[in-house]
Length: 422
Image 1: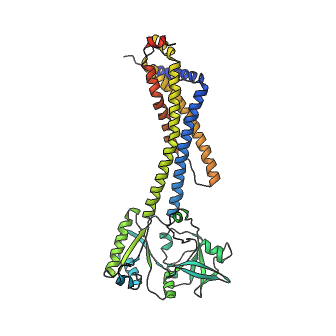
Image 2: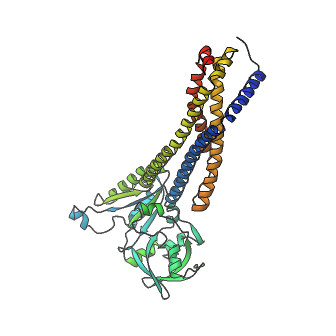
Image 3: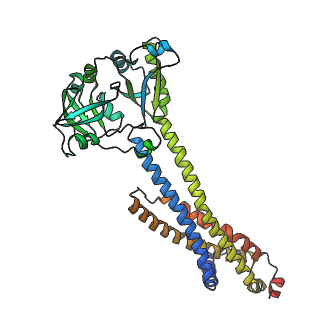
C-alpha cells in the first residue's frame, strides 16, 4: 500500500479544485443557476428560522411580563350545587392569608400576595374634572415582584404602607395618559377613589399584551389601565375581610402544579372543605405558545426547505449533464491510470463547490433580508450563529447528496465504452 504525504494530498486537492473550477466555468450559466437555486433555499430556510426564533422571543418576553412562575388561587363556585354557590365570601380570609404566610405549609411557593378587588372590578377614578373607569386592585408589597411589574417612576409599596393602610397608589400608563393629560411626572399628584384621596407614589412601566389578547387570555382587561392600592386599605373601603385571589410565585416553574395543590389543600383544611378552589397559572399559556410557535416554525421551515430541494435537484441536473458531456474525458482519464475513486471525488468536489458557493451567497442574502425586515417591522430579529451554521451545513450536505448519483455513475463507467462515446 502506497503512503501519501500531507503535501501530496494537498497538491492533489489543489489540482482537483482547479479542474473543478475549470469545468464549472465552461458551463457558467448552468453553474450560476444552480448556485442561485441553493442560495434561494438557504435564504428562505435562514429567514424563516430566525423570524420564528424572533417571534418566540417576542411572545415569551410578553409572557414573562406576567411572570412565568406565577399562579393564582381563588374560590370556584359550583353553580350546579345551589348550597355551595349560595355560601358567601371569597373562601379566603385575612386569617387564611396570615396563616399561610406563617405556617410554611407550601414549600413550592417562594412568595405570596393578597389581591382584593370590587365585585364590579372596574371603578371610577377622578382627578380634578377628569374621570376614568379603571381596574383598581388592592395588593400586598410582594405583588410587583410576583407579577413582574416594574416601576418606571417613584417607588413601590413599603411594609408600612400596607400595615398602616396608607392612601397611596401606583398607576398604569393608560391612567397617566387619561387622568393626568399625559403629564410625564404624575408622582406626588392626587386622585380620588370612592371620594377618598390617594397620593400617586409610583408609575408602572407599560406592558404589551398583543399575544395574550389575541388568544383571549386578557378578556378585555387592559393591564396598563390599573390603579394599585394597599389591600388592607381597600378591604376597609369595601367593608370586607376577604381576599379575592391569592397570587403566588413558585420556586421553580416545574413546581407550579405542586404549588397549586399545596395551597388548595391548605385552604380546604382551613375551611373544612366548605369551599372549592381553582388554580390558574402561566403554564397553560406557555404550553399553548410553544405549540403554536412550533407548528408555525415547522411549517415555515418545511415550506422553505422545498427551495433547498429544488436547488439540490438543480445540482443533480447539472452534474448529470456534465457526466454525459464529459464521457470521453472520463474514458481518457481512466485509460491513462485514473482510478474510479478519482473520478468519483472529482465530480463530488464540483458539486461541493456549487453548494458551498450557493450557501455563502444564501447566507449573505439572508442577512440582507433580515436587516431589511428588522428595520421595516421593528421586530427583534438577530442572526443566530448556530442556525446559520446548520443552514450552511445542510446546503453542503444537499449538494453532496445531489452530486453523489452523477459522480457514482461517472466512476462506474467502463473505459472502453466511455472512449467510444460520441
